[in-house]
Image 1 (spheres, rainbow, N blue to C red):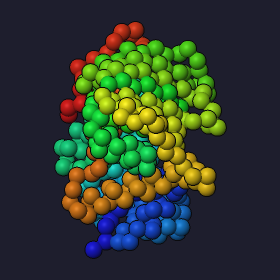
Image 2 (cartoon, one colour; image 1 turned 30 degrees about the vertical axis):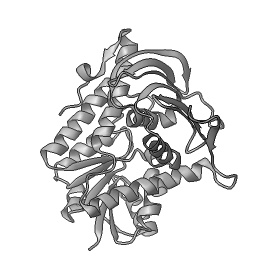
Image 3 (cartoon, rainbow, N blue to C red; image 1 turned 90 degrees about the vertical axis):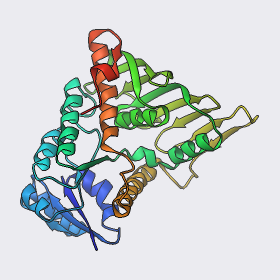
Image 4 (tube, rainbow, N blue to C red; image 1 turned 45 degrees about the vertical axis):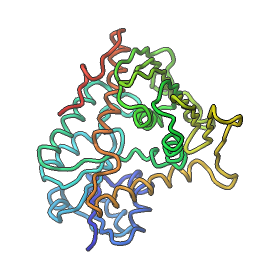
Amino acid sequence: MALKVALLGAGNVARNSYLPYLSRRAGVELSYYSRTRARAEACAADFGGSVAASLEELLAAEPDTVLVLTHETQRYEAALALLDYRPKRVFFEKPLVAMAGQDSVTEDDFFRAREVLAGAAAVGAETAMIFNYRFFDQTVRARALVAQRGWGALRQAALVVNYACWSHCIDLLGLFGGPLATITALAGGVEYEGAVDVAAAFQLANGASGTILGSRGIDFGLPLYEMTFNFEGGLLRFTDLDGPLEVFDPASRYVESHGLRANFNRWAQYEDSFAKSLAAYLDSIEAGDPPPVPGRAGLAELQFEAALRRSAALGRPVDAAGEFPLDF
């Protein structure tokens, strides 16, 4: 029996990052709805599937999941409209909500996102997120290495991130270190293309501490992020989109370095990560398992951003769980 996958939004994200995999996967039946019908029709012509004239028609076919691929500035309204038709499952692009764009997440975006997830829970819709950086080869390798070598908990972290990768890197910090406890931030020292730099010191719920710098001013010819994670038993350093991973293990006199061969590039790895994320998600549906990245992960990422913005605005530490609770 075919797996029915509906796409809400048929722009460049759907066309370039989602449909190449979805159209190749056996046993998938695609359908589309877009406010610009011509975009949906173009996707159907190029990748197969049917076009719905309305959300009501899209959901009347009882899709197994709806992928919400609208622009982040439109995702809140699109998600609320979708929930009126009680979908079985909803899969979100990142960030979950960003009404002014991903460079300018606000406190209100967190509360809107919490409203969306609460609405989904109320109608019995399972939610999931893309966060495809979790599926980079280097991320998978690092998680396995930490577990296999028994390195224990994260203790310190330092992140320098281009805003293009911002929400993903915050998610990876949570993946390796757990939830945020408190954060103290500054903003506005440098502005590039309308986005101000932010810098923050944070403490996680497990006691780990660290720093994060976010900027639009990191040139795309440079590594788009660098992250250093120091665990109880060793240290990892990540650089760029599935780029070099350095492993520092005190049990060895050598530094281990894992990097791409010369005939592979970061953008190919980036596109492949969407296929890996979607494969894991659709596999979970077919197996009747929970999604590999739950919708709650998107809310946790926005909690970090909202707490950071409040701290920078008010000039004080912010208790993330107390001021931006994840319960809904």
